[in-house]
Image (cartoon, rainbow, N blue to C red):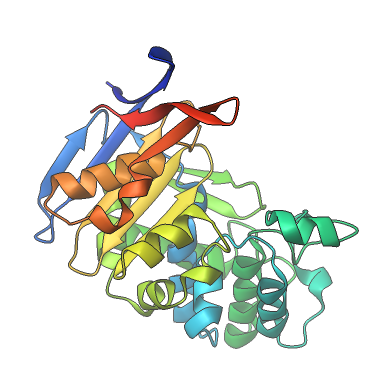
Length: 299
């Protein structure tokens, strides 16, 4: 059964509850934390991006450094992100991107742009990497999002190999790419397998391209060098350390506000020092511009 993971308090009153599941693996691969229904399937959503980037790399896409980080990330649409996406396209027209047009998530950038675009969409780095993989492998580019496409079959094989289990469901993510369902435990296993790959190295080395200015994933990786953090829609989060710990979180109501605190608490429960990121262990609740409560982990 899902468990109570976090509660929201306001002026001493418990206002909301977040139920879900969290699993943490020790460097040995043994389970160090298990709360809730960790064997139930989840859709990883954007937590799938590091595995998609690894598949693109395996297909021959020329990805390294910031380019590999943005392929595995959900960028905030800043100009530096757009410039890198255009470089990844390598002369291909931006119209080949099949992610939907979007406003940038970075508020300062959004005030400056006049219309939504595909390159500003947070998944455009992943989509540009997929096109680069198609060029490198000589696969059809126009149909790269079809679940039957060679690239998407490679992504599925990559996920199944790292998670050590079979995909139980194929869905279409918000950006149009296939997303593969697996257990939360399997997602943590996959992250533990990813942590020593070039993808994880790039994410750790260039966290500003995994998210962006002030983005929670970027901030956590800056506070905890050696940690990989990647969130996904509908309350999913994965964390992994260069020592081999791995954590996967799913909040059932889909709200992500507690996921980072839950994930860091699970890392701490396994003996990993998260004190440099202590400000992320809870989320302040404001009233009249003042802190009057918090979103706090209770498992």
